[in-house]
Amino acid sequence: MTFKPDHHMTTSTNTAKLAISGLNMSFGDARVLHDITVDIRSGRKTVLIGPAASGKTVLMKCVAGIHAPDTGTIMIDNQSITGISQRDRNELLADTGVLFQQGGLFDSLKVWENISFRLINNEGMGRSQARDLAIDKLARVNLPASTADLLPSELSGGMQKRVGIARVLASQPSLMLLDEPTAGLDPITTKAIYRLLDRSIEQSHATVFAITSDMESARTEYDDLVMLHEGHVVWKGAVADIDASANPYVLQLINGRAEGPIKMRMKARA
Image (cartoon, rainbow, N blue to C red):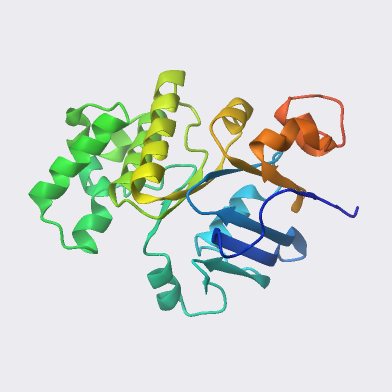
């Protein structure tokens, strides 16, 4: 099938914090991403959606420097992070905060040490100051100060998710890559997380690129939207333009319709 995505989003790299061009990624003989080209505009929240196994997390991991794409370029602030050494890539990604779907916390470190890890190890912050800052960030994601001295294994999945968000916010990165930032959280905490992201954008001109399966949040909490289906970009544009787009892929997914071009993948029974 040949995909011809709608193109509503600005494509000038002058306004792009993150510019992805011609990205292809395979695992063995399986092509996962097909010619992904999209710009993530500075100072905005862009959401990445798509049905299961559409390539969302793989794309995010390419941007985070975890996967090396087969072809194509990824540029942050007009500097390429592809085709360079791991050391140079790490330097270019130093101002990027990443939240993995499962939290990605260090099991052997206390919660406050996880939150302040970059501040202590990269920026030389004193441990006392770092702990105080971590407790402040915990409060902002609706977790009590007593959480600071626990290990990740002592937390529920939802609490680990909030600690992961607190860790991203602690270093005030200019680019945040968030994989399902509010999955499993209650509506009150979800709203609090999005207000924190808004505040980061206002205060430090941060840019957010996030994956979500929450279609209500995709509609109400983000500025721009990119949709993947079977590793192709099938729509990209401003969230406000979704309903007028007449794109059957994005309208089916965002409205939760059973009928449409996206077919549910059924797992074969053994």
